[in-house]
Amino acid sequence: MGHQTPKQFLPLAGKAILLHTLEQFSEAIAEIKFVLVLPKDQLSLWKEVSANTKYADVPTAIGGNERTDSVKNGLDLIPSDSLVGIHDAVRPLVSAATILGTFAKAEESGNAIPVKTLTDSLRTLEGDISKAVDRSNYVSVQTPQCFHAGLIKSAYENLEGSFTDDASVIEAAGEKINLVEGNLENIKITTPLDLKLAELLVEERSR
Image 1 (cartoon, rainbow, N blue to C red):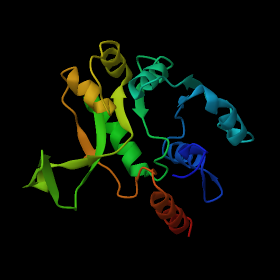
Image 2 (cartoon, helix red, strand yellow):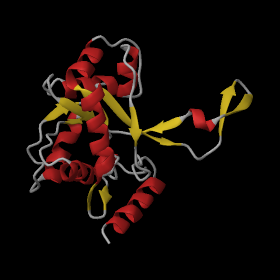
Image 3 (spheres, rainbow, N blue to C red):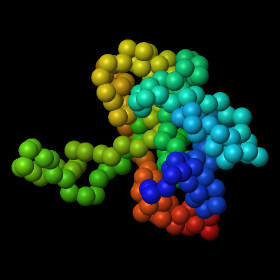
Image 4 (tube, rainbow, N blue to C red):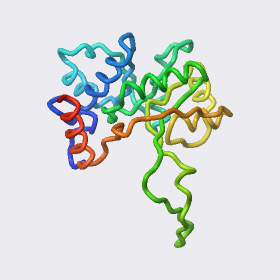
C-alpha cells in the first residue's frame, strides 16, 4: 500500500478501516461480541484508534507467525458452544445481508462462507502452457466465514498442513462447505486502488 501504517488502521472516510468493519457487524447484529487478533506491536495503535469508541474494551488476542496461528489464538477466547464468524479486518464494506445470511446458514448447517460468481475469463497455468477453464465452475471467496465454534476449534486443534482460509481447515477435517451469496462491495482492501474504490463506495452509501 506504500504506507508504514498497517492497512486496517489506514483512514477511510475519516476513520480507520477497522472501525468501519466493526460498525458493519454491530449494525447487522446488535448483540454481537468481538475478539480482535492483532500483532503485539499494533496493540498501542489500536488503543489510540479505539479511544472514545464503544470498541475500546474489545478483547484482543496476539497474532502468531502464520495466519492459522493467529486464528487459533483468537478462537481460544471464543466459547465452544457459540457461533463464530472470522472476518478480514480490511473488508469494511461487507453488507448486513451477507453477515446475516452467513451466520444463519452456519447456525443451521455448521458452517457457511459467502462467495461471488466470477465475471472475468479464467485460464489455468501448467508450466509455460495456459488453458482456458469454465469460470462457471469457480467462485471467489469472501468473509465472514462462519462456524459452530466447537467445530472450527476442533479442526484447528488437529491442524496439519498450510491453509489460506478457515473453510479449507474445516474441509480438511472432512466437512462439506456451505456457500451463501456475498456482496460485490465486500472487497478486501490491499492496494491503493482498492482504498480509492472503498472511499467512493462509502461516500455513495452515506448519501
